[in-house]
Length: 484
Image (cartoon, rainbow, N blue to C red):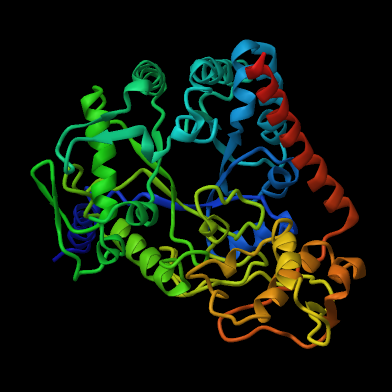
Protein backbone atom coordinates (compact mmCIF):
# COMPACT_ATOMS: atom_id res chain seq x y z
CA UNK A 1 0.00 0.00 0.00
CA UNK A 2 1.41 3.44 -0.96
CA UNK A 3 2.53 5.63 1.99
CA UNK A 4 -0.23 8.21 1.39
CA UNK A 5 -2.89 5.47 1.51
CA UNK A 6 -1.48 4.18 4.83
CA UNK A 7 -1.62 7.69 6.24
CA UNK A 8 -5.23 8.14 5.15
CA UNK A 9 -6.19 4.75 6.60
CA UNK A 10 -4.50 5.58 9.91
CA UNK A 11 -6.30 8.94 10.04
CA UNK A 12 -9.62 7.26 9.31
CA UNK A 13 -9.11 4.64 12.03
CA UNK A 14 -8.18 7.26 14.63
CA UNK A 15 -11.13 9.44 13.65
CA UNK A 16 -13.71 6.66 13.67
CA UNK A 17 -12.39 5.26 16.95
CA UNK A 18 -12.98 8.59 18.69
CA UNK A 19 -16.27 9.56 17.05
CA UNK A 20 -19.03 9.84 19.60
CA UNK A 21 -16.56 9.50 22.49
CA UNK A 22 -17.55 12.52 24.54
CA UNK A 23 -15.58 12.22 27.77
CA UNK A 24 -16.53 14.93 30.25
CA UNK A 25 -13.87 16.73 32.24
CA UNK A 26 -13.32 15.93 35.92
CA UNK A 27 -12.48 18.69 38.37
CA UNK A 28 -12.69 19.28 42.13
CA UNK A 29 -14.46 21.58 44.54
CA UNK A 30 -12.01 23.69 46.55
CA UNK A 31 -13.62 24.85 49.78
CA UNK A 32 -11.92 27.16 52.26
CA UNK A 33 -13.95 26.60 55.43
CA UNK A 34 -10.95 25.51 57.48
CA UNK A 35 -9.57 26.91 60.72
CA UNK A 36 -6.01 26.47 59.44
CA UNK A 37 -6.23 26.35 55.62
CA UNK A 38 -3.43 25.09 53.47
CA UNK A 39 -1.88 28.20 51.84
CA UNK A 40 -3.48 28.83 48.42
CA UNK A 41 -0.18 28.64 46.53
CA UNK A 42 0.46 25.19 48.00
CA UNK A 43 -3.07 24.13 47.01
CA UNK A 44 -2.45 25.25 43.43
CA UNK A 45 0.78 23.23 43.41
CA UNK A 46 -1.22 20.29 44.74
CA UNK A 47 -3.75 20.68 41.90
CA UNK A 48 -1.03 20.88 39.27
CA UNK A 49 0.93 17.95 40.75
CA UNK A 50 -2.19 15.83 40.31
CA UNK A 51 -3.02 17.18 36.83
CA UNK A 52 -6.33 18.59 38.03
CA UNK A 53 -7.21 21.33 35.53
CA UNK A 54 -10.68 22.37 36.69
CA UNK A 55 -11.67 23.75 40.07
CA UNK A 56 -14.95 25.02 41.47
CA UNK A 57 -14.93 27.61 44.27
CA UNK A 58 -17.78 28.44 46.64
CA UNK A 59 -16.80 32.10 46.86
CA UNK A 60 -14.43 34.61 45.29
CA UNK A 61 -11.59 34.68 47.82
CA UNK A 62 -8.98 37.11 46.48
CA UNK A 63 -5.98 35.09 47.74
CA UNK A 64 -7.32 31.96 46.07
CA UNK A 65 -8.06 33.67 42.75
CA UNK A 66 -4.67 35.37 42.74
CA UNK A 67 -2.91 32.07 43.41
CA UNK A 68 -4.65 30.54 40.38
CA UNK A 69 -3.34 33.27 38.09
CA UNK A 70 -1.19 31.82 35.32
CA UNK A 71 -1.95 28.22 36.32
CA UNK A 72 -4.19 27.57 33.29
CA UNK A 73 -6.64 25.86 35.67
CA UNK A 74 -10.25 26.53 34.65
CA UNK A 75 -12.13 28.18 37.50
CA UNK A 76 -15.74 28.50 38.63
CA UNK A 77 -16.15 31.39 41.09
CA UNK A 78 -19.09 31.46 43.46
CA UNK A 79 -21.46 34.10 44.77
CA UNK A 80 -22.91 33.33 48.23
CA UNK A 81 -26.67 33.24 48.71
CA UNK A 82 -26.44 36.18 51.10
CA UNK A 83 -25.53 38.46 48.18
CA UNK A 84 -28.45 37.56 45.94
CA UNK A 85 -30.76 40.23 47.34
CA UNK A 86 -28.33 43.11 46.75
CA UNK A 87 -27.31 41.82 43.31
CA UNK A 88 -30.97 41.56 42.32
CA UNK A 89 -31.78 45.11 43.40
CA UNK A 90 -28.70 46.90 42.08
CA UNK A 91 -27.01 46.67 38.68
CA UNK A 92 -24.22 48.81 40.13
CA UNK A 93 -23.56 46.16 42.79
CA UNK A 94 -23.38 43.51 40.08
CA UNK A 95 -20.99 45.66 38.04
CA UNK A 96 -18.77 46.13 41.08
CA UNK A 97 -18.80 42.42 41.91
CA UNK A 98 -17.81 41.44 38.38
CA UNK A 99 -15.07 44.10 38.32
CA UNK A 100 -13.63 43.02 41.68
CA UNK A 101 -13.93 39.26 41.28
CA UNK A 102 -13.70 38.56 37.54
CA UNK A 103 -12.38 41.43 35.44
CA UNK A 104 -9.38 42.20 37.66
CA UNK A 105 -8.19 38.60 37.31
CA UNK A 106 -8.68 38.50 33.54
CA UNK A 107 -6.67 41.46 32.19
CA UNK A 108 -6.19 41.82 28.45
CA UNK A 109 -2.47 41.36 28.90
CA UNK A 110 -0.28 39.51 31.38
CA UNK A 111 -1.00 36.56 33.63
CA UNK A 112 -4.69 35.72 33.99
CA UNK A 113 -6.93 33.52 36.09
CA UNK A 114 -8.93 31.35 33.69
CA UNK A 115 -12.45 31.96 34.96
CA UNK A 116 -15.05 29.97 32.99
CA UNK A 117 -18.18 30.16 35.14
CA UNK A 118 -19.78 32.44 37.70
CA UNK A 119 -22.01 30.38 39.97
CA UNK A 120 -24.80 32.63 41.23
CA UNK A 121 -25.80 31.35 44.66
CA UNK A 122 -24.97 28.04 46.27
CA UNK A 123 -27.88 25.62 46.02
CA UNK A 124 -30.38 28.46 46.67
CA UNK A 125 -33.30 26.05 46.08
CA UNK A 126 -32.32 23.73 48.94
CA UNK A 127 -35.37 22.84 51.01
CA UNK A 128 -33.71 24.06 54.21
CA UNK A 129 -33.80 27.64 52.86
CA UNK A 130 -37.49 27.62 52.07
CA UNK A 131 -38.31 30.25 49.45
CA UNK A 132 -36.17 33.04 50.89
CA UNK A 133 -33.84 33.28 47.87
CA UNK A 134 -36.39 32.61 45.10
CA UNK A 135 -37.43 36.26 44.56
CA UNK A 136 -33.84 37.43 44.04
CA UNK A 137 -32.16 34.66 42.06
CA UNK A 138 -33.14 35.40 38.47
CA UNK A 139 -32.62 39.14 38.87
CA UNK A 140 -29.19 38.56 40.40
CA UNK A 141 -28.17 36.18 37.60
CA UNK A 142 -29.48 38.60 34.95
CA UNK A 143 -27.55 41.53 36.43
CA UNK A 144 -24.33 39.49 36.67
CA UNK A 145 -24.75 38.47 33.03
CA UNK A 146 -25.28 42.13 32.05
CA UNK A 147 -22.17 43.10 34.00
CA UNK A 148 -20.12 40.45 32.21
CA UNK A 149 -21.44 41.72 28.88
CA UNK A 150 -20.51 45.29 29.82
CA UNK A 151 -17.01 44.07 30.70
CA UNK A 152 -16.83 42.23 27.34
CA UNK A 153 -16.37 38.91 29.13
CA UNK A 154 -19.72 37.29 28.34
CA UNK A 155 -18.18 35.22 25.53
CA UNK A 156 -15.60 33.77 27.95
CA UNK A 157 -17.52 33.44 31.21
CA UNK A 158 -20.92 31.76 31.58
CA UNK A 159 -23.43 32.36 34.35
CA UNK A 160 -24.79 29.24 36.09
CA UNK A 161 -26.86 28.42 39.18
CA UNK A 162 -25.91 25.32 41.23
CA UNK A 163 -29.03 23.36 42.20
CA UNK A 164 -29.47 20.85 45.01
CA UNK A 165 -30.80 17.37 44.28
CA UNK A 166 -33.85 18.01 46.46
CA UNK A 167 -35.05 20.39 43.72
CA UNK A 168 -36.72 17.32 42.20
CA UNK A 169 -39.64 15.14 43.19
CA UNK A 170 -40.39 11.65 41.95
CA UNK A 171 -43.61 9.71 41.85
CA UNK A 172 -44.49 6.86 44.18
CA UNK A 173 -41.92 4.05 44.18
CA UNK A 174 -39.61 5.91 41.77
CA UNK A 175 -42.10 6.04 38.92
CA UNK A 176 -41.41 7.98 35.77
CA UNK A 177 -43.20 11.01 37.22
CA UNK A 178 -40.23 13.31 37.83
CA UNK A 179 -40.65 17.05 38.08
CA UNK A 180 -39.28 20.06 39.87
CA UNK A 181 -40.78 20.82 43.28
CA UNK A 182 -44.07 22.75 43.00
CA UNK A 183 -42.67 25.72 44.93
CA UNK A 184 -39.92 26.03 42.31
CA UNK A 185 -42.11 25.98 39.19
CA UNK A 186 -42.08 29.71 38.42
CA UNK A 187 -38.44 30.38 39.35
CA UNK A 188 -37.16 27.19 37.72
CA UNK A 189 -39.00 27.96 34.49
CA UNK A 190 -37.36 31.38 34.41
CA UNK A 191 -33.96 29.88 35.26
CA UNK A 192 -34.13 27.28 32.49
CA UNK A 193 -35.14 29.94 29.97
CA UNK A 194 -32.20 32.06 31.15
CA UNK A 195 -29.72 29.17 30.88
CA UNK A 196 -31.12 28.00 27.55
CA UNK A 197 -30.85 31.46 26.02
CA UNK A 198 -27.20 31.76 27.07
CA UNK A 199 -26.26 28.17 26.26
CA UNK A 200 -25.23 27.62 29.88
CA UNK A 201 -25.31 24.13 31.41
CA UNK A 202 -27.49 23.01 34.31
CA UNK A 203 -25.35 22.68 37.47
CA UNK A 204 -26.65 20.09 39.93
CA UNK A 205 -25.47 18.18 43.00
CA UNK A 206 -25.69 14.40 42.89
CA UNK A 207 -24.91 12.54 46.12
CA UNK A 208 -25.19 8.75 46.10
CA UNK A 209 -23.86 8.80 49.68
CA UNK A 210 -26.71 10.92 51.03
CA UNK A 211 -29.22 9.04 48.87
CA UNK A 212 -27.98 5.81 50.46
CA UNK A 213 -28.32 7.31 53.95
CA UNK A 214 -31.85 8.56 53.33
CA UNK A 215 -33.30 5.68 51.33
CA UNK A 216 -33.64 2.11 52.56
CA UNK A 217 -34.14 0.99 48.96
CA UNK A 218 -30.69 2.13 47.83
CA UNK A 219 -28.05 -0.40 48.87
CA UNK A 220 -24.39 0.32 49.52
CA UNK A 221 -23.37 -1.90 46.59
CA UNK A 222 -25.70 0.02 44.26
CA UNK A 223 -24.20 3.30 45.47
CA UNK A 224 -20.59 2.15 45.01
CA UNK A 225 -20.86 0.91 41.38
CA UNK A 226 -20.35 -2.69 42.51
CA UNK A 227 -21.25 -5.37 39.98
CA UNK A 228 -22.99 -7.36 42.71
CA UNK A 229 -25.60 -4.61 43.16
CA UNK A 230 -29.25 -5.48 42.64
CA UNK A 231 -30.50 -3.38 39.66
CA UNK A 232 -33.34 -0.85 39.92
CA UNK A 233 -36.03 -0.11 37.35
CA UNK A 234 -36.98 3.48 36.63
CA UNK A 235 -38.88 5.00 33.71
CA UNK A 236 -38.90 1.61 31.94
CA UNK A 237 -35.10 1.46 32.12
CA UNK A 238 -32.79 -0.75 34.17
CA UNK A 239 -30.14 0.89 36.35
CA UNK A 240 -27.04 -0.75 37.77
CA UNK A 241 -25.83 2.11 39.98
CA UNK A 242 -27.13 5.06 41.97
CA UNK A 243 -25.29 7.68 39.91
CA UNK A 244 -27.04 6.78 36.65
CA UNK A 245 -30.40 6.66 38.41
CA UNK A 246 -29.88 10.12 39.93
CA UNK A 247 -28.51 11.57 36.71
CA UNK A 248 -31.47 10.37 34.67
CA UNK A 249 -33.79 11.79 37.31
CA UNK A 250 -32.31 15.18 36.37
CA UNK A 251 -32.56 14.39 32.66
CA UNK A 252 -36.24 13.44 33.05
CA UNK A 253 -37.06 16.62 34.97
CA UNK A 254 -35.33 18.79 32.35
CA UNK A 255 -37.12 16.95 29.56
CA UNK A 256 -40.48 17.41 31.27
CA UNK A 257 -39.74 21.13 31.51
CA UNK A 258 -38.98 21.30 27.79
CA UNK A 259 -35.17 21.09 27.84
CA UNK A 260 -34.32 17.49 26.89
CA UNK A 261 -30.90 18.34 25.47
CA UNK A 262 -29.60 20.83 28.02
CA UNK A 263 -26.03 20.08 29.05
CA UNK A 264 -25.59 18.94 32.66
CA UNK A 265 -22.65 19.61 34.96
CA UNK A 266 -22.42 17.57 38.14
CA UNK A 267 -21.41 20.39 40.46
CA UNK A 268 -20.78 18.25 43.55
CA UNK A 269 -20.33 14.52 43.97
CA UNK A 270 -18.21 12.55 46.38
CA UNK A 271 -17.99 10.17 49.31
CA UNK A 272 -16.89 11.21 52.83
CA UNK A 273 -14.22 9.33 54.77
CA UNK A 274 -15.27 9.92 58.38
CA UNK A 275 -18.08 11.04 60.65
CA UNK A 276 -20.63 8.32 59.81
CA UNK A 277 -20.93 4.53 59.65
CA UNK A 278 -20.73 4.36 55.85
CA UNK A 279 -18.03 7.01 55.61
CA UNK A 280 -14.51 5.58 55.34
CA UNK A 281 -11.42 5.92 53.16
CA UNK A 282 -11.87 2.43 51.72
CA UNK A 283 -15.48 3.05 50.68
CA UNK A 284 -14.60 6.49 49.32
CA UNK A 285 -11.83 4.94 47.23
CA UNK A 286 -14.24 2.36 45.85
CA UNK A 287 -16.79 5.04 44.99
CA UNK A 288 -14.38 7.50 43.35
CA UNK A 289 -12.71 4.75 41.33
CA UNK A 290 -16.11 3.49 40.22
CA UNK A 291 -17.24 7.00 39.30
CA UNK A 292 -14.11 7.84 37.31
CA UNK A 293 -14.14 4.52 35.47
CA UNK A 294 -17.82 4.97 34.65
CA UNK A 295 -17.36 8.54 33.39
CA UNK A 296 -14.44 7.53 31.18
CA UNK A 297 -16.12 4.40 29.86
CA UNK A 298 -18.28 6.66 27.69
CA UNK A 299 -21.28 4.45 28.44
CA UNK A 300 -23.36 7.37 29.61
CA UNK A 301 -26.74 6.58 31.16
CA UNK A 302 -29.84 4.78 29.83
CA UNK A 303 -31.47 8.11 28.90
CA UNK A 304 -28.27 9.68 27.60
CA UNK A 305 -26.16 6.85 26.20
CA UNK A 306 -22.58 7.74 25.29
CA UNK A 307 -23.10 11.24 26.66
CA UNK A 308 -21.64 11.62 30.16
CA UNK A 309 -21.93 14.91 32.07
CA UNK A 310 -20.27 17.89 30.43
CA UNK A 311 -18.13 18.26 33.57
CA UNK A 312 -18.03 16.59 36.97
CA UNK A 313 -16.66 18.20 40.14
CA UNK A 314 -15.63 15.93 42.99
CA UNK A 315 -16.48 17.01 46.51
CA UNK A 316 -13.94 17.82 47.69
CA UNK A 317 -10.25 18.55 47.34
CA UNK A 318 -9.54 19.00 51.06
CA UNK A 319 -11.25 18.34 54.38
CA UNK A 320 -12.72 21.46 56.03
CA UNK A 321 -13.13 21.55 59.81
CA UNK A 322 -15.38 24.62 59.73
CA UNK A 323 -18.07 23.29 57.39
CA UNK A 324 -21.58 23.18 58.77
CA UNK A 325 -22.52 19.77 60.17
CA UNK A 326 -26.26 20.46 60.14
CA UNK A 327 -26.81 17.56 57.73
CA UNK A 328 -24.27 15.25 59.37
CA UNK A 329 -20.81 15.07 60.91
CA UNK A 330 -19.48 13.60 57.66
CA UNK A 331 -19.71 17.07 56.07
CA UNK A 332 -16.18 17.90 57.27
CA UNK A 333 -14.62 14.84 55.64
CA UNK A 334 -15.35 14.98 51.89
CA UNK A 335 -11.72 15.56 50.89
CA UNK A 336 -9.64 13.46 48.56
CA UNK A 337 -6.90 14.86 50.78
CA UNK A 338 -6.75 15.57 54.51
CA UNK A 339 -6.76 19.22 55.62
CA UNK A 340 -2.97 19.31 55.19
CA UNK A 341 -2.96 17.94 51.65
CA UNK A 342 -2.12 14.28 52.32
CA UNK A 343 -3.91 11.75 50.09
CA UNK A 344 -6.38 9.50 51.91
CA UNK A 345 -6.30 6.77 49.27
CA UNK A 346 -5.01 5.95 45.82
CA UNK A 347 -7.08 6.82 42.78
CA UNK A 348 -6.57 7.70 39.13
CA UNK A 349 -8.61 10.82 38.42
CA UNK A 350 -8.35 10.07 34.72
CA UNK A 351 -5.08 11.93 34.26
CA UNK A 352 -2.93 8.82 33.82
CA UNK A 353 -1.56 8.55 37.37
CA UNK A 354 -2.54 5.64 39.61
CA UNK A 355 -1.98 7.52 42.85
CA UNK A 356 -2.40 11.03 44.19
CA UNK A 357 0.58 13.26 44.94
CA UNK A 358 0.71 14.80 48.42
CA UNK A 359 1.24 18.48 49.22
CA UNK A 360 4.90 19.22 49.79
CA UNK A 361 6.76 21.24 52.45
CA UNK A 362 3.71 21.76 54.66
CA UNK A 363 4.60 23.72 57.79
CA UNK A 364 3.04 22.40 60.97
CA UNK A 365 2.81 23.62 64.53
CA UNK A 366 5.18 21.99 67.03
CA UNK A 367 4.94 18.26 67.71
CA UNK A 368 2.82 18.73 70.80
CA UNK A 369 -0.57 17.41 71.81
CA UNK A 370 -3.02 18.07 74.61
CA UNK A 371 -4.27 15.01 76.50
CA UNK A 372 -6.18 14.37 79.70
CA UNK A 373 -4.13 14.25 82.89
CA UNK A 374 -4.89 10.84 84.38
CA UNK A 375 -3.53 11.93 87.75
CA UNK A 376 -6.42 14.36 88.22
CA UNK A 377 -10.01 13.86 89.34
CA UNK A 378 -11.78 13.23 86.04
CA UNK A 379 -15.34 13.34 87.32
CA UNK A 380 -15.97 16.56 85.36
CA UNK A 381 -13.85 15.59 82.34
CA UNK A 382 -16.81 14.74 80.11
CA UNK A 383 -18.34 18.19 80.60
CA UNK A 384 -15.00 19.80 79.71
CA UNK A 385 -14.76 17.63 76.59
CA UNK A 386 -18.23 18.64 75.45
CA UNK A 387 -17.29 22.28 75.89
CA UNK A 388 -14.12 21.70 73.87
CA UNK A 389 -16.03 20.00 71.06
CA UNK A 390 -18.47 22.91 70.88
CA UNK A 391 -15.52 25.07 69.82
CA UNK A 392 -13.48 22.56 67.82
CA UNK A 393 -13.93 19.60 65.48
CA UNK A 394 -14.80 16.29 67.16
CA UNK A 395 -16.66 14.74 64.24
CA UNK A 396 -14.28 11.75 64.16
CA UNK A 397 -15.78 10.73 67.54
CA UNK A 398 -19.23 10.30 65.92
CA UNK A 399 -20.87 6.86 65.79
CA UNK A 400 -19.10 5.04 62.96
CA UNK A 401 -16.29 7.61 62.95
CA UNK A 402 -12.59 6.74 62.93
CA UNK A 403 -12.23 7.55 66.65
CA UNK A 404 -15.62 6.32 67.85
CA UNK A 405 -14.27 3.09 69.34
CA UNK A 406 -11.76 4.78 71.60
CA UNK A 407 -12.37 4.10 75.26
CA UNK A 408 -12.76 6.69 77.97
CA UNK A 409 -10.72 8.81 78.74
CA UNK A 410 -8.86 8.60 75.40
CA UNK A 411 -11.87 10.20 73.71
CA UNK A 412 -11.61 13.04 76.23
CA UNK A 413 -7.99 13.51 75.13
CA UNK A 414 -9.10 13.69 71.49
CA UNK A 415 -11.54 16.49 72.32
CA UNK A 416 -8.94 18.36 74.34
CA UNK A 417 -6.37 18.08 71.54
CA UNK A 418 -8.78 19.23 68.87
CA UNK A 419 -9.47 22.40 70.84
CA UNK A 420 -5.75 22.86 71.61
CA UNK A 421 -4.71 22.57 67.95
CA UNK A 422 -7.45 24.86 66.64
CA UNK A 423 -6.29 27.46 69.15
CA UNK A 424 -2.70 27.35 67.88
CA UNK A 425 -1.36 25.25 70.76
CA UNK A 426 -1.60 28.12 73.21
CA UNK A 427 -0.80 26.86 76.72
CA UNK A 428 -4.06 28.15 78.18
CA UNK A 429 -6.03 26.20 75.56
CA UNK A 430 -4.88 22.96 77.25
CA UNK A 431 -5.97 23.96 80.73
CA UNK A 432 -9.54 22.67 81.09
CA UNK A 433 -9.58 23.44 84.79
CA UNK A 434 -6.29 21.65 85.31
CA UNK A 435 -7.44 18.47 83.53
CA UNK A 436 -5.28 18.99 80.43
CA UNK A 437 -1.65 17.98 79.97
CA UNK A 438 0.68 18.96 77.12
CA UNK A 439 2.74 16.04 75.81
CA UNK A 440 5.30 15.42 73.06
CA UNK A 441 4.25 11.77 72.72
CA UNK A 442 1.82 11.25 69.84
CA UNK A 443 -1.42 9.82 71.33
CA UNK A 444 -2.74 8.64 67.93
CA UNK A 445 -3.90 5.01 67.88
CA UNK A 446 -5.02 2.51 65.25
CA UNK A 447 -7.09 4.48 62.71
CA UNK A 448 -7.62 7.46 65.01
CA UNK A 449 -5.25 10.30 64.19
CA UNK A 450 -4.65 13.10 66.69
CA UNK A 451 -3.80 15.87 64.20
CA UNK A 452 -1.34 18.73 64.50
CA UNK A 453 -2.56 21.87 62.78
CA UNK A 454 -0.89 23.76 59.95
CA UNK A 455 1.17 26.80 60.87
CA UNK A 456 -0.36 29.92 59.33
CA UNK A 457 1.20 33.38 59.27
CA UNK A 458 -0.35 36.28 61.17
CA UNK A 459 -1.18 37.94 57.84
CA UNK A 460 -2.99 34.82 56.61
CA UNK A 461 -4.78 34.51 59.93
CA UNK A 462 -6.08 38.08 59.81
CA UNK A 463 -7.15 37.74 56.17
CA UNK A 464 -9.02 34.55 57.06
CA UNK A 465 -10.71 36.18 60.05
CA UNK A 466 -11.67 39.25 58.00
CA UNK A 467 -13.12 37.11 55.20
CA UNK A 468 -15.14 34.95 57.60
CA UNK A 469 -16.26 38.10 59.44
CA UNK A 470 -17.56 39.55 56.17
CA UNK A 471 -19.52 36.37 55.49
CA UNK A 472 -21.01 36.57 58.99
CA UNK A 473 -21.83 40.26 58.46
CA UNK A 474 -23.62 39.57 55.15
CA UNK A 475 -25.57 36.73 56.77
CA UNK A 476 -26.60 38.88 59.74
CA UNK A 477 -27.65 41.83 57.58
CA UNK A 478 -29.64 39.58 55.28
CA UNK A 479 -31.43 37.91 58.20
CA UNK A 480 -32.24 41.35 59.64
CA UNK A 481 -33.63 42.50 56.29
CA UNK A 482 -35.93 39.47 56.17
CA UNK A 483 -37.27 40.28 59.63
CA UNK A 484 -38.00 43.87 58.58
